[in-house]
Amino acid sequence: MKKIIMLAAVDRRWGIGRRNRLLFHIKEDMEYFRNKTIHNIVVMGRRTFESLPGRRPLPNRTNIVLSRQKELSSRYGAGESGLIFMESCEEALEYAENAQQSVFIIGGGEIYREFLDEASEAYITKVDAVREADTFFPDLDKLPEWKVISKSGKGRETGCPEYEFWHYCKSGKMSVT
Image (cartoon, rainbow, N blue to C red):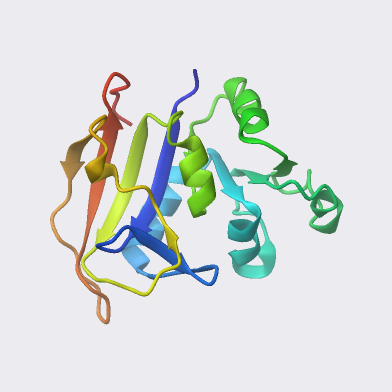
């Protein structure tokens, strides 16, 4: 089975977004995201894709967008620039099984929940703040099969709350990336 890795920035209540927007814009977190996902596969839901700047795929990655809306493929030019639309998690997993790259699940909330059983790792940026959120990541600290492997020291950018990078692995699926 291909390694499935989840990646998100969360507030203290595991909130990730509100009205289809991220809760935080932390430069170091964005660089961390880019460095982890570059030259790999990213899987996201339609709303996450539509929240990307210019509704364009992330460069230098294979972008898989999950949606039951078949017309999106032609609307956004699927097949160009590494953009692929698929209808199900199973279809995305089947595609990823034959790929050489790692697979990163990047949102939104429903997509994280659908891949939770398949995932073996999670890179979570924990931000020491509470924001008004309408979308949440599963609270890995309350799931006994998930264990913290490492965490960074606290970081802080001007105008942003403190944050830490946490690496989780699921028991029985331990590996280091």
